[in-house]
Amino acid sequence: MKKRIIAYKDRIDACLSGEIKVEDWQKLLEEHLVQVSFFQHERLIHLLVTILFAAATIAVMLVEVVTAYTPLLIVFALLLILLVPYIKHYYLLENKTQEMYEQYDAILKKIEEEDNKE
Image (cartoon, rainbow, N blue to C red; front, side, top):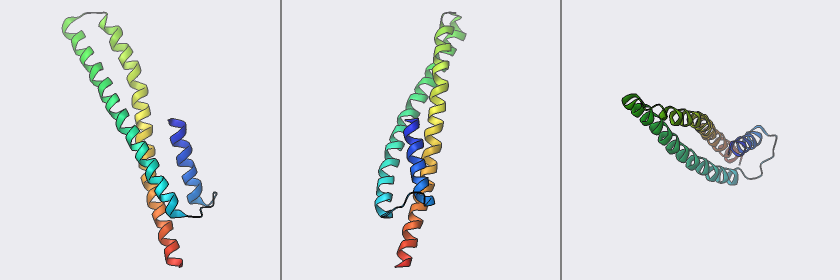
């Protein structure tokens, strides 16, 4: 997913900068809205998974503190190790999706500029 979102964002940036010629900005805008909705869905799923892992990590930590059952430290460590990449991936999804909102605005501006030329 990381490669896909970065590649897509870079392609739209290339379109906006003129590196890639765009024949129909309206069609690009529609495609962009579809892609943004895919990434928003992915972002929501990863948010839920991240929250679940964070809650499980905290719950295991609290049980360990209350019971002093040492083997739970292994479970806590494993959950913590998994939580870090989930947070990192969610951070990427969140930021790239926000950047795509700015791209959407830029595409709208291109459409307005085209309309004003006519």
